[in-house]
Structure formats: structure tokens, C-alpha cells
Image (cartoon, rainbow, N blue to C red; front, side):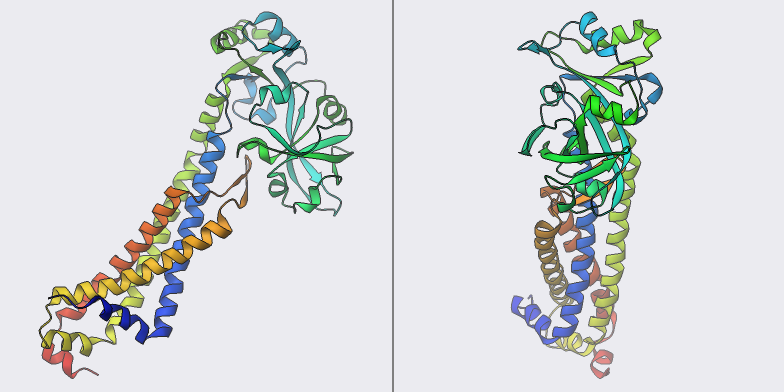
Length: 384
């Protein structure tokens, strides 16, 4: 015969302070799990949404996978357009985007400075970067910039500091913010965009970092790659944009593995903390447990009742942490080497966080319950 369900619930209410402290401890552990899993899911989403399968990137062979270090000749876009077929061309404009991309120190009107990612672009850029949408303001004119949705997080400043009409300073020049853009969670959202010719003048550079080409259905990335290999004097390489960000996924694989290791370690620490608290809770109930055995309840029923209490506490802590994570953490911007991305508390994160919480309840309650039942009933009844 099992103990009534209400018995375990009433036991939690009999010790409100201990129950509250245990609930807070369990909720804190689960919240840490949500933070780490949200970080992993946000990083993966940012990289997976940043590529376009129809876009080919052409950049320097010497830069390896860091486009910020790439430098190619300014005439390469014209050479690609003339030599390679299959690029999209509409309304007299070829969808080829020459870009200058680099990290530089950016200072706002409050004298707050941070490392920002700046991209010099042309009117062809939004035709190639099809995920980018201007959500506020206008396209930059001379001396103006538009900022991504997560640019403030990358700079470590507030949203108000880079609002429309505010002034930013980088590369020895003042720039006025004319607009804001979003890109569906991709890496572009942490960047600052300005006109290519203005950025080249400010940096005193006439070269480019890369060329992005939008291919038509008849176009071939292999043809672009073949052109790059034949023109060894240009020292350029070509890669599909999706393949480029897939390589970044592999590059950040150790970071993701480290984050999953943190999840395991936090969970293990939570289990040990739960064991400690449950041992303390069961140690003060030795006579109660012995009495239950004396009146006829089997040990299995008592163990299930104690585990029920632990699971109830853990489930409540998981629910509390889940609500806080969805309301406070989901979408929170995080700075990273590649720019910035938003924490993502999705169904996978909720499943992992709540699963860890319930595991804490079961594993934390089971060992102390079994230990308490090993004592002789007569001896336990005489304990203080």
C-alpha cells in the first residue's frame, strides 16, 4: 500500500523555511542550466541563419577563415562580373556586393568605447544580403551609418547610445546613425554598416575585404571557384556562404563542447547540493519514517513518498526557472568573438532544463531515503 499523495505535499508545508531554501537552491541550479543551454542554442542559431546557399563569398586565400584579415584588389568585382556567368542581374544592377569589413574601436557620445564590426557596403548589398531588413530610419548617405539590432550589445553600450540621430566615432571620423536593421538573428545584426567609399576614405584603403555574389539558378559556385584557382595572381578563393558559416560552426565546436561540459558540471553540483539538503531533511525524520514502517507501510512506499517530495520541489523550481528564463533571458544579447547573438530559450532548452530539474529531485532524494530505511525500526523509534 502506498502513502497518500497528500501526505508528501503536507510534509513540504510543515517545514516552510527548509522547503523555501531547497526550492531556491534547485531553481538556481536549473536557471544556470537554462543560461548555458540558451547560450549554446543562440550561438548555433546565429551561425545557422547567417548563410545563404545562393551566395558565394570571394576573399583572400591568406586570411584562412577570418574575413576581417582579408584584403583583395578593388578591381576583382569587375573581373568576376565579366568572367563568371550565372550572377543575378535585375534593373541594370548586377547582384555583386564589394565589401570592406573590419573590427575597429567605436566611441559614442557618452565617451563609451568598444570594439565594433564595421562593414562598408554599396546599394547592391541589400540585394545580395537578402535576410537584411531596414526596420527604422533610412539607408546611409555620406557620413551616415546604420546599426544592427545587436550592435549595442557588441559595443557594450545601451540602445539609446546608438539610437537614430546619435553620433558614433571610429577611424577618426564622426558618423551619424541614420537607421537600424535586422537580419533574422544572423551575425550581421551585430554590425555597423556605412557607405563603402566613405569607409575606404576613412581607413585610407582602396582595397576590399570580400565580394559577395548572388547566383542565379543557372549559376555555379564551382565556376567561381575555378576562376579563383586559375587566376593565381589574384590570390583569392571562393566558398558558398553556407559552407563558410558551417566551417565557423566547426571552429566554435570546442566552445560548444565546453558549454555542454558546464551543463554537466552544474547538474552534478546541483545533485550533490540536493543530496546534502535531502540528507538533512531525512535525518530529522528518522522517527517519523520508523513509525510509518511500524504501522504497516512498506519501505518501497516510504521511499516513493520521499522521492515524491523531492520531485515536487524540483518540478516547482524548474517551473519557476523556466518562467524567469522565458521572460528575462530569452532574446538577451550576449557579446562574443564573432559579434553578438541572442540567448535562445527554445523547446530544446526548456526540455533540457526541466529534465535536469526533475533528475535533481529523483537522484537527490533517493540515496538519503534508502539510508534512512536501513536502520532498525526499534532503534529509529528511540532516536531523538
